[in-house]
Image (cartoon, rainbow, N blue to C red; front, side, top):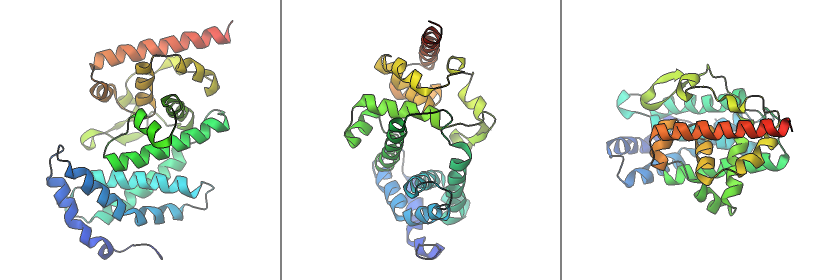
Amino acid sequence: MTGAKEHTGDYAHLAPLFGELAALPESDPKRAELRETLVTEHLPLAQHIAARFGNRGEPRDDLTQVATVGLINAVDRFDPERGSDFLSFAVPTIMGEVRRHFRDTSWSVRVPRRLKELHLSVSAASAELSQRLGRAPKPSEIAEHLGMTKEQVYEGLEASAAYHSVSLDEVRGGADDEVTPLRDRIGEEDPALEGVEYHESLEPLVRELPERERHILALRFFRNMTQTQIAERIGISQMHVSRLLSRTLERLRRRLQDEQNP
């Protein structure tokens, strides 16, 4: 890896920080500072891995962003007590994130260029703020960071539904390293969105929804959060989230049918 830090020795001085991070309680404000330091100091590794995929037609900045997400995941999941060094864990984790990006992401329906660019801006801001804050940013925080309205942020979040096309049988890790098919993690199907040919036709209908329903949809379909996680985020019960999702999706389904069959 010419021109980039590559050897374990280049990062050896950071190893004690992982032990410090693991020892701190979740509520300790120093966790975010240590986490940011570890991510920042290992960025050359993520950048180099992104560069290795630079001949596949994807913008370099986008690949670096994806690799950085992989790095953040590696920092969050690394357990120093298992005896391996961080690079041995981080390199396959970052490369896996980049490969998954190529395998699983594409514009699965035709989307206006404006929405594509908005999606990329919101995604980049979300990754940057996640690193800075140590948690997923709120739409209002993304809006302030980008100097746009929350409505525009929601548009960018909603556009991601047209960008990510993932098999429901794909196995992914969940909380506490639980490995389950994506189908089992997201619960029952969402038939209300089946058969939507153009994402643009859905956008104005979503914009008419109350802010809370839009927020729940964004968390559910952009952040891939479970109903339980959404309930904890916004302070209501999981059952209430389930009802709101079902009601909202049914409302969108009826509106789409009305527009397609006037």
